Length: 111
Length: 115
Image 1 (cartoon, rainbow over the protein chains, first blue to last red):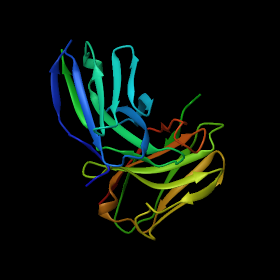
Image 2: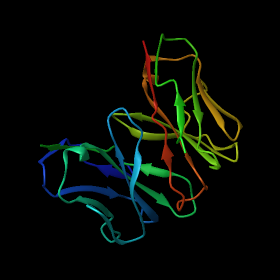
Image 3: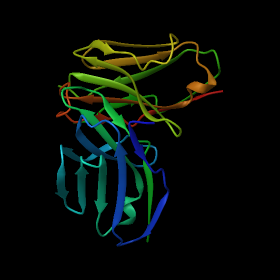
Image 4: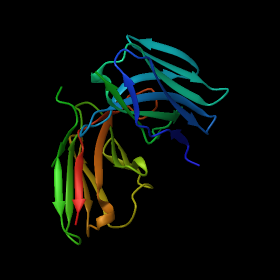
């Protein structure tokens, strides 16, 4: 079992839809949770970053961590074609350098 | 800031040849990471440097892979001899610190194809 699991998709939604992207993780000691967005032929770029449980909002994006169920979510409101990309979740133990990445979910937002 | 700079963007080589990938981290960042990305396995950490010193190379697949960081602004990842199963996208990333509270910044990657 991988430490961080993601559904690879692809996920296709119409423009303006609310998108829900999800990951599960197995190590209950993980404290840091990140979402990276990766456009085709580019490197991943940090989108959202949370520490421990709870919600974090940034514009149209909301990251949610539920440590009781080991579930990480990213919600995108009013999705745009420019949101079409692969979204990678990542987790990390406190005090370490090792990011553990999911394999990514490919999202297509149709105009 | 120019971000993390990697070269070349694309590399096509024949099996058995030596391949060298290059990386310039963001100025002031003291941690550097090499990752490999494939469809099947996603992003895998190959090696981690802190202050130019290799801290963890447990992800380096075989002795055919080696990495160096001669100074704070340059790192190389070398594969010798290369094999078709090494075909992947190789990313370099840097961060300001060495622990989770410091964010990771990636380069654009090197697409390696070994024929």
